Length: 94
Image (cartoon, rainbow, N blue to C red; front, side, top):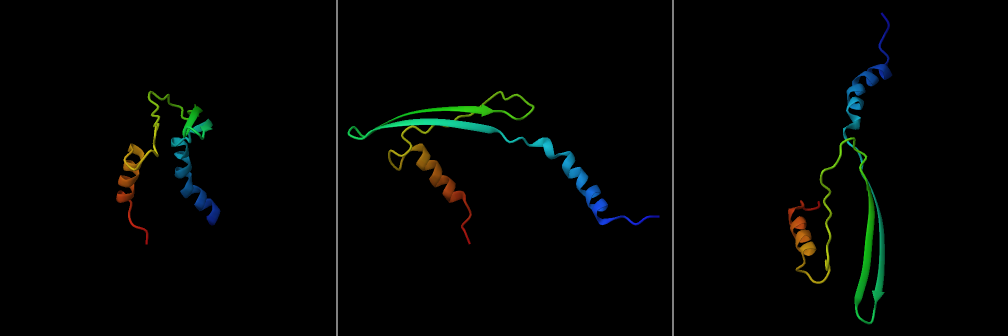
């Protein structure tokens, strides 16, 4: 009987891991953002477009898009409040 080579044993043990490797598909999003500043009026004019590529074999029935208008207006916007909540939920750094 021939001895089992270490690489053969490793390949046999790793085979189940590769069998399920395609369960996750990375999605692709390409953004195009154009912004114009009116400095004297303190205004920004912006336009955003994006191309979303679903690399999964399943069709999507919903695509959630979060827009944050006036996100940095003051410290009481939805963005600021959500960041404060997230910071409180994070464990402290050691």
